[in-house]
Figure (cartoon, rainbow, N blue to C red):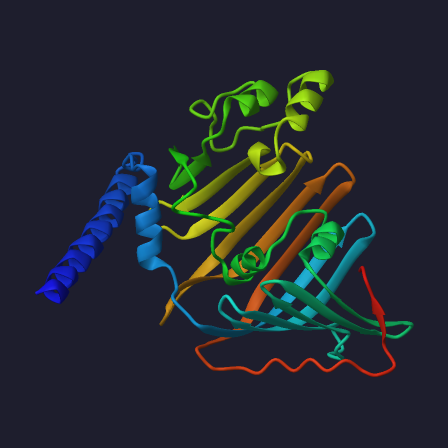
Length: 304
């Protein structure tokens, strides 16, 4: 009886979400705006279409641009969900130059670049320092697999806004954030700039009384028809930096919809970084091994 009731409830929920998409499609065709949805409805609609997987293998073609120039590379990626991320990097010629293995509490790297051969074993603090932005295992997994990064559907509180043909979820924040940017969370628009407007003395005082998570504003965009996770934006007022992740070229696969192109933009007081990759090949639910042997003549380093 309980199983039958659960099945009926799931079917009703799925039908309700489908009707939301169909309703919006008709509204867009008539030049009308999307239906107003609350944050829970947006998140439930996204969850209903999100890909469910345990194992993932893929090959990507990527480029990174910084003030030093542009570098291109290819990568083979293997992931055991919530457990291991394994990456092999190679330039255009196809000779492996680095191998990376991430676990929830550790980071391992082997550099095979001539003249710079070493291995690193440490934690995410060193990786975050190198990237100049805080990173955790689950954050990297989200980025690689096209999921909204750092989205906690239980703890996060959002306001929902309509942004053309997409829904934007904007995190609610405390009064001290309003003192820094001059706008309360109900008035923030999806594309508003959230630069610090407060005087330096006030900023220093608020920063001293607040931990870094308390000055982080998150925004997530979802397509109004498919509820694909189009973009994430993180404005870190504590360190005055931002991260934007944009996903595009979604394809309908057997396991669900998946973005074929992902772009990252990091902006810090010291400069910016842009990284783009295209998915060349994917395979789901094949159990992979994660070879990671450290050559005997490689020195160990404590930083990148």
